[in-house]
Image (cartoon, rainbow over all chains, first blue to last red; front, side):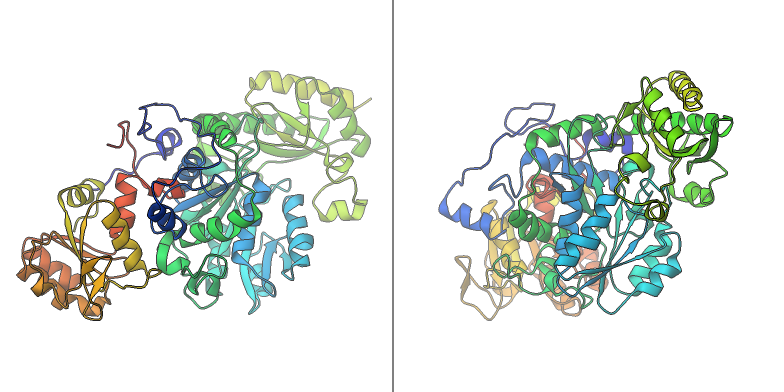
Length: 433
Length: 153
């Protein structure tokens, strides 16, 4: 009998965690320990040689953290996953495992600011160059590929641009050049979009956002598809004896989870950005309810977007779930349907009539929407990028980053939508004065 | 072809002796990793490799034919094109399962063994499957596909 293919609602609750072998505890125990005893010298040697699976030290692996890893791997339809202390740490681990000095990256232009800094500044310092291209054009990715290109990087749903990546088209470009497509899938979450099913090879998340959903805990995760042919000649670090881990050939030894094992033993182990067990447990409390939360985020956001479209104090609305969004057909193809419409997650942006000053007045008049720089919380969050996250840029640079003076970004939460519409309406009224 | 969780569990649970064809004595080779792991988990490993005297403390056999004990699983770490004669030997020694490792996919050998009543597993690692189904692989963040409300006993 073929194995049952469980639905994401079931995987979100069960994947990675069976009742504790030692105690029978049904809820996930928090293994708050740095280290694990060896049964014998031979057992220790086997663990260090990776001949047996087991825990040595919580910077490498921890049973509580491993449940989060397996659960997100299952939700993404991936082969294996590796958790990290934050979304940025996860991204760094993925890229530092893939890349070395002299390598080149092709990345979508409108990315989260922290990611742009990592590619354009931090990795550049290590001799890894990035070409930024128009993320809406698969041809632009193809035109930027070089013989030294070793990764293509993009966001499935851009933050704050809300640009939608044609994952299958860009994956085809990357694969034609024998390199993996790395997709940041933070904004849709694995419930609304599975980049691996569309051709992506590695998926990264800031689990701080929708996966946790409560705004209490930082975490990140890297998921490997298990399908990339690492022995294509471009990734000797995957096929040759590892200098960083006494001669192990990761692809030959671990096969379709070789990248994750290499990321764990060469990168996480050395750079140390491990996720705390308590943090993994907190994120998992959120993951259990991810599917029901994402549905409400989507329906609330769509209703807010429609309300804003009809509001006289609003110049424009950018929400990929609106039929008027220029990439709506792509959204419909790539995202899970929610209540009869493509589930486009909870982020939207709009322009307040009256420019920069009106944008600030709107924010300051909000009563229950929280003014802060995060997304994916149960609470509705609001920010005016031109006066906060992007204020160090001049107006021309802001325009290039997709930030206009009147732009307000909402991360629509789980409050009753009528209360949200009320708060938005009164804040828009205040923005006029 | 045994490819689902229940069948793989049954094969691994009812087997005790594994003849590992192509087992290397080099500690960093995948065959050594797998055999050492299975030995540590209580299986009797019988190395089959004419190049060595002993591996993992067990006497090596040049072929399956000279093994004196009943063999449950013939675990094949050889090139796909070399598997057919191994399948014939596995049938001759009345092994219960022909197991071709990851990347080893000889359909003809599998069909021959299946026709002779052997269980057949292909393109899977015996160690990874054991760790997936009986615990261990989940510690490495791998998606095991196991969903269960029972303790792993």
